[in-house]
Length: 281
Image (cartoon, one colour):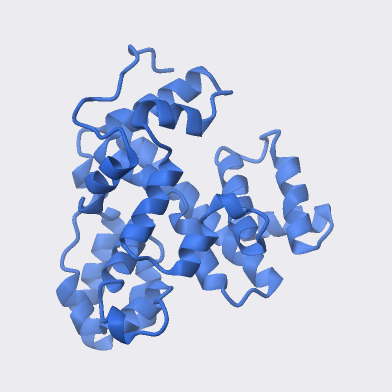
C-alpha cells in the first residue's frame, strides 16, 4: 500500500467546473500504442481499407473513439439532421482518405506517461475496465433487442473518460484519489473527487460532452442520474459487473449484480451468470 504523505490539489489545477472544462477541452488525447500501430498498418493499405476496418480499430480504444466523435461533431453540423453516433458512422461521414489525412500518426499513452509507472498502471486499469464493460453492455443490449446497441457499447466504452483524462493530465490527483480510497474503502468516489477537484468527474464529463457536442443519445445514456431508463441501466450494470470482476469473480458484490442484470434481461439468475461467463470467453 502507498504510504506516501497525503497530497493536496496543486495550485496549477482548477478547482471548479468551468476551470476543469477549460483545462481538459484542448488537451492531447493519446491512444494506446497498439492502436497507433494498427492505424499505421491500415494507412499503408489505404486503398484496400473500408470504414468497418477503421472503425473496428477505433472502437477498441476509448480515447481515440472520443477524439473521433469530438472531431466529427465539428463537421457540417448545419447540414446534418441527425447526430453521428458511432465510430463507423463517423468514418463514413469523413471518408477514408480524409480520415487518414486528419488523423496522422497518433501520440501514444505509453510515451505520454513515460516514467510514470503508477499513472500508467492506473490508466491501464480504467481502459481495461472500459473495454470489458463495453462488451458486457453490447451483449446485454443485443439480448434485449435494443436497436441502439452500438451506441450503448460506445456509452460503456466512454463512461469513465473523465477519469482517463485525469490519469493522463493530472496524474498526481488521480493517484491521491486512489490512495485515499485504498486507505478507506468506504470513502465514496464523489466525496473524495469533490474534495480534491472541487467537482465530481461525472460533472466534468457531462460538461465536456456538451462542450464537444457529442451525440445527444450518447450524453443521455451515460447520465447515471437517469438510472430508471433501460438503456442507462444497461450501461450502469455493465460498468458494475466489469468493475466488480476486475480481479476475478469472487467479489461479494457480484451476486447482487447478477440479480440486477437478470432482471434487466428478464432471465433467471443461473442463465444470467452463464451468459456473463460466455461474454468473457
